[in-house]
Length: 251
Image (cartoon, rainbow, N blue to C red; front, top):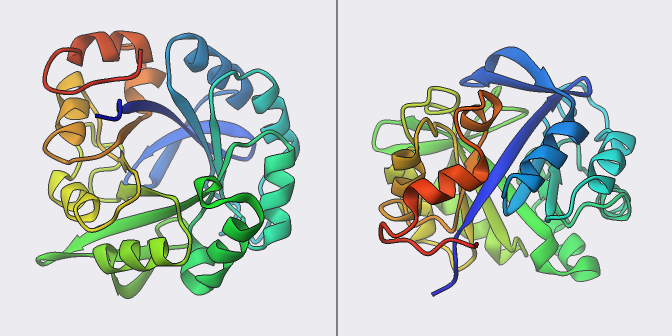
C-alpha cells in the first residue's frame, strides 16, 4: 500500500496567504514563504501554493514569491495559478516548484497538459479541478471558481489524465472553507474513475475529516488549510490523530 499524504495549502492573493469560505470573503493569514517553511518543519508531506487571483487578473504566477518559498522548503512544492503555457510551467519549475497545477488553461486547452508532460514528465502535471454540486452531479468551474461550465467533474478528470495529468487536485467549492468535511461523494467518484493520485481539497475541519477523505473518499492525499492556519493542529499532530485508524501515512 502506498502511504498517503497530508498537504498544506497556501492560497495566495496579492502575495499574501489568504483563506475564505467558498472562494469568497478572503482573510489574510500571513507570508507564503514563512508559512511554507513552518508547515514543512511541522511535518507536511507537501505544500501547495495556489495564486488564486492570477487567472482572474490575467497575469502570471508570482515567480519571485514562488522562488523565495521554494528556497525555504524541503518537501515537494506544487504551484498553480496563471499557468497558460509550457514556458510558464518551465519558469515555475526553474523557480523551485516540483509540480505545476493547471486549471482554467488546461480546461480551455487540454493539450497543454500533454505538452508540459512531454517536456517534464506527467508527474509534474497536476490538473486542478474546482467543482460544485448540481443535482446528482458536479459541474466544473473555472477562473477561480467564478465561471460555470457545462462539463461534469468526473468526466473531466478522466479526460485530463488522458491528456497527461499525473495527479488531480480536486476542490469542492461547496465545502471550501466551511470546515464541515470534504465532499466524500465527489472525491470517491473521481478517485474511482482515474488511475492517478487524487488530492482531496475543501472542508477539512478536524482529523476525522482528513481520515474520511483518505478512507471513504479514497483520496491519496488530504489538502488542509484552515486547520493549520488557525494553529489548532500542525501537520504532524494531525497525522498523529489519525495514525492507526485504517490508513497508512507518510512518517
